[in-house]
Length: 531
Image 1 (tube, rainbow, N blue to C red):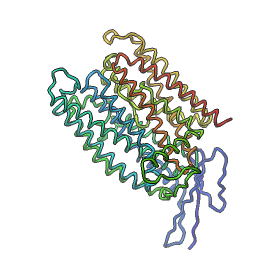
Image 2 (cartoon, rainbow, N blue to C red):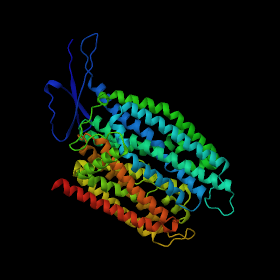
Image 3 (tube, rainbow, N blue to C red):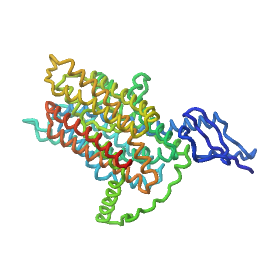
Image 4 (cartoon, one colour):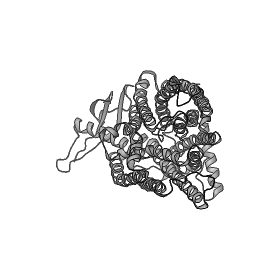
């Protein structure tokens, strides 16, 4: 019985050529992305079976989209969760950012404390088992979160002020209990999504790309685009998850009320569990290399921790020292500074490098007088701008290179945020509002999304390439998330100190300084790798 193995060469992402492995060479011209995997299939009846070009091309494209879509399904609900409950918390707790900041602060602390541990779980747990467990936990927590909001709005929607004068003890206890429960669920969700992000973006994607940088860019872009398209296209497509979109949440809550809306979302979350479990298995079985779970080799001077808190802290310290010595650390620091910005409306915030804390929405609702329809339209336009960023980045990379594209992207974001900051310092009365200032705020916020999504893709690819052969790559990738959470912690601390919407301009000033600092850190990274 003879076996014939073929590899596939993809020229410019379109033409596909089958080359026998006997004459296949690993190295190729820069413009050709070669798939280094051989596709084997033996027909037990006839002896030899070889995929035809059309079948193999379809397999490659379908599995790539499968990988992207499988992860985007999970992220879709998380990205919508970042905006819908934020609006609800604003409705409950009035004109204060303290509850929102407490939720964000707690999530950030949890991420900082346990990111390294989550990365270890990704490294040590079989890939499929980890993802199936994470998906199940995510659904339980999301459904529980929606049920908490449904119960609250059914019975306690009028008692949300934490320090209402004259409120009974029962009202105060109920209000605080709701907030504490929301915080606990948010923290657990943050850890689950951190694990899924590290597993898919840092581990699965890198393995699937098999060292092919063009395929790595393509797959990273798919993850971003599908998540963004979920927010843009779902209202047009009329899919069942339409209720979960910010563009129409106000109409749902108006016609059905908050309790019914959240019950619907709970049901959709439960239904999606089976679809996502099926999708992740399809992706896993489509790429045999994902089944290979190699054992890590300890670095010189870094040993696996034994049992005990002291040993664990010592290992964590060693990992941070190792991470800080790598050139990619400056790039990680650059993208982390963008998490300090409050100048984001909250589009797809899990993937976006500036997680929304609700202060922007509170400001435009209470100070600018924008209604939910205007805010929903702004969010949709930000999604579209982010989609443009994911489309522009691969083209710029081909023309200018990955590192130069990153430089242009982050400085473009800085330039777009300057008019946004100017608009914040213009005196505004939403009864006689200054139209040009509102235009600067609206337009600058939208355009800045092009820069941040493009830069996020550039930095992600740099991280993946840099850590590809590192024995602790998922642990170190998780440390970047911890670094980002440290800047998120500063942001939520800032919004708690400047909790009044009228002080939002000062948080905006800090945001611009932070993003500019990130651009300087990225320049330092380029200097480090080229000296």
